[in-house]
Length: 401
Figure (cartoon, rainbow, N blue to C red):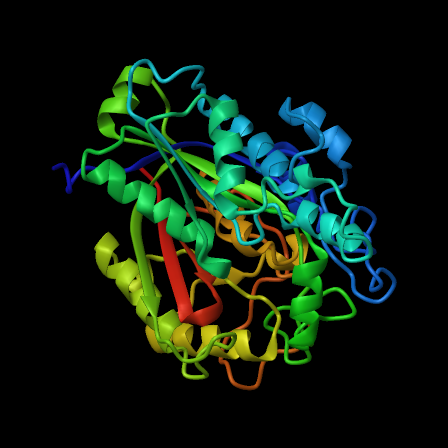
């Protein structure tokens, strides 16, 4: 066992509503260009009333970029594109006999294709294309990605709602620390579907305008889609691949307060336990954190819960913080991966991101998120929060080497 070894992050990749790669996303973040607007790719009766954060490309175009068939689930297309960029940016062309794994998260699987099938099938049980249901289950997208990337040693799928990607990342870190794998591509992907849009709408937590997380007048979240992955290396892999690490994953924790199936504990119990556990794992004091990438969905319940936990841990000295969901929307199973990429970039480039559309401080909290983009900032440690339905809460800490 190598439980004391460091886990190095050597590269990242992303596709989201604000860009099809890291460079485009950075430009959007720097210029405060959000990706939230009227849906173009998804067909829904809510097209004119519920804004979403879609990737600005059809399945046909995504398939060309991913070098995969256009008739497979959009989740797999998005994931493959981001994962390919991850390996490219890390300079990894092959694994040179190293034990490599893919830990990919999602929450909708191939539902984008399944719901098209059932629309026809329910009208006529002899209609509908059965190939649209082949990739329905969550693990199918991961298998497609693994085949495209040439990863064979360890492949698994994590689906724990909005904390899925964060859990995939720290599961991968544990596999490296325990000498089970040398290289891990971890993160998540999710495509927008009518099922999730209608489901969240039934919970009455969607905003009919662009969301404003941590604002007193917030009204809900905007759903988004995309994919984000990082590649983690052991010390052995770092030497074999001659890779240049960007940062380390120094802390992580998953906690569950089991408060409610779709609501966060008002006292922030799960959020508190996740952040506290990640800090303990990293050996850092709260004062060491330079930036918090908030879970920050923009719902009444979530922002109070997360903010209350932050107050309990960090009061009276708060790090800079913001919710990048104000750019990308809430990408569900992909959110922890996308925000891990943003966290890595914050350390690598000295970025602090703005919390778009924030105007009024929440009356329950003594702090406010950042409202302007900053670069050239000394960022040594970033805390990234991903809190999901069912009370499944995870926090990751990224640290400068």
